[in-house]
Image (tube, rainbow, N blue to C red; front, side, top):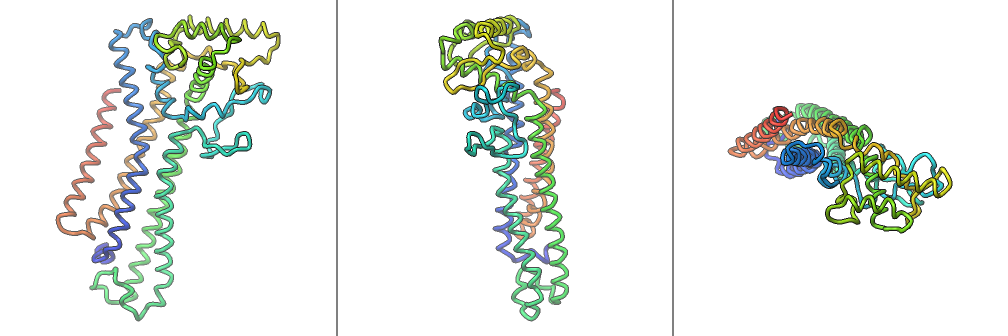
Amino acid sequence: MLEYLFQNFTGLDIIIIILLFLIIISFVPLIELKYQSDLYENIDKFNKYCLNDDVNLIKELNVKSSYMWNMSMYLYDYDNISKFFYRKGENYERDYKELNRDLSSTIYDFKIIDNIMKIYNYYLGRSLWLFIFLIIFFISQMYIFIIMDTYDEQDTFFYCFYKTLQDNDAKKEFFRYYVYILCIYILLFIIFFSIILKKLTELYADTDTYEYIMLMKEFDIILKENNEKNADIINILKKHSKYKNNDVSYITINDSKIVNELIEAYESKSRKEGYVKFSIENKENYSIRLKNLEKIEYYNSDESKSKVKNKVEDIFRFIYVYILFLIVPLYILSISLQGKYTYMLFIIIILIIFSISVYSIYNTLQA
């Protein structure tokens, strides 16, 4: 029956092609997220293999070689992450603000700044155009459906219908079902779009990446400013650097001995200052107290990394939903184009499904 509506309607081809393009643009962030997670996981495995799985040698790897560092750098806007630090005296319980899981932007120092949840913002931005396009298209179709009665005698209005539907009432009835289906299609997209956004926020809220990257940022600030007042901590960090000594990513810090040295240096400095609410000196007057310093080893543990990997897997499963969203417009486009294009479009669908299925099975077997 769909050919009754869509044959000989060239304007629809353009709409469907735009829709397909926007759908593909929308799910690209999910594919990239999965790719990045797999890439850094494989690098992690490769490092262990090259070091013969020796725990002591693995602990000597610098920060930039770790899965948690690379994934955290991918998940967060590292350049703007310092904007989420409290200033000295603003908060004595925390060093930094909690992430706002409901907003893509937040207010800080009376300025609106983007939230540092980079992948959340990336997916939201890519999908927003698809959402707007679907809403506008649905409104236009509803408008046509509402004014159809005013064109009862003008057969030219029904140029998009197949010529065999000569009865106007039949045309209107068919268009009614078409609007219903379109409404269901858009509602399903909104539902799954909301679920995916929620899943993305869980990647931030239910893993240790935020605590980890904020602690690393504190170390980075200390190193780059190189304040003489922080010499004890800086010397420990530089002592365990193999290459650059002013960048935390080149520091070897995943070792209990180093962590104990840092804790001792921090506590000693705190005692010298003579007050409990101590914060390390820095140019921007951020509240830097190296919270959760003792958890560095845990952040790089298999348990902590598994939290991130499992969340990424949960998000990536929604790629199959996008395949369903692609099938409908591809099928309509195949009807409109007719001929050999029909076979080509279905081959593309099969290849997409096959490729993703093989990729998913491969990762399952690797686990």
